[in-house]
Length: 421
Image 1 (tube, one colour):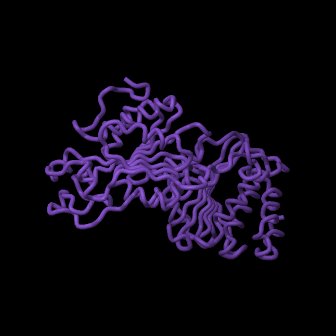
Image 2 (cartoon, one colour):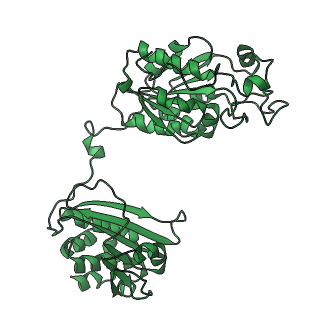
Image 3 (cartoon, helix red, strand yellow):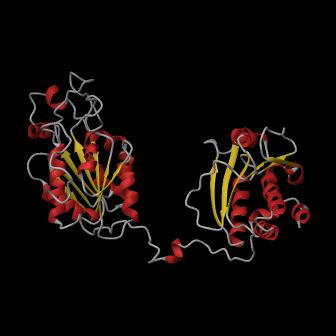
């Protein structure tokens, strides 16, 4: 058994071409003298995806049609010398066609192997975008009426460094080896017949003849002339100026010794996320570690806007907020969105705008006129300033400086900062 496989038997139907794809991939990896730790195999939803457990490499199983997006992201973060192989079927390839074309356009350094058995084998034998005209499927028993996409031509036109189509019979490991050795985006389309559906519904067809009739001619296409380098995002060690986050100098001292979770919530368009960002900057200037997570409807400009902020003296390994220590509510939208967790609070403090009814809660409730002091658009900033002033965890001076240094300072009511100072 190969170094790359954990088992001799593969979990596919007897006679399925997926067996050969996996074994030819292994031969290609062996020819390149790679080790399992050099390889990340990303699979899609489909029969091919059940091979995950049989490979000794790193494996990632994605959503239907999304394996190329996942694999491209992984490849962009890996050092040179590592290989990302992406498996998907013809269904996943057409569902995720835009991912494929964008990865080819960027020339991301991945190798995509498409198991093209010309139908959805896992879900009952329906046609996909790669089903050829005349091919019979469970819902087109008289033959598929549409022509198939030419996947190799599409990725070649998009900018792929390498594209090949093979009939999935025998040893085609050299083609996969060449794809893996290519710097940049490479795609190998393997033509197969699904034993469960394709072969039964088209008993008179043989794979090589089908390929010829459908215009699925085997071939190899590479970029002529100057070869584009593979896309690699700048790495911190090479371009620290591009990836380094801006420094926030520590100028203040926070009394916090542990960790505190705060929720700030109001209405969309009223500066909730901006106020949370200013709070985070002030906390960093006081020597704290911070995380911030925003939540709002897909409409963005309508409804609630909630920010979850964690402040800690130590590194934060989980940024979820289930039981907040402090909650600031500046509008009815924010109250509605957080009513359940406010009711579940057994302690802590709730700051709520004076225009709102006081909700049921086990927290201490402090009513403040945020909207009256700052107006609706800046009520959230008034909320974090009030919290800073009364809680004392982030020094008020740090919070005021963060606000004054921000573009929003010129838009605030003239006396707002003076009231807090």
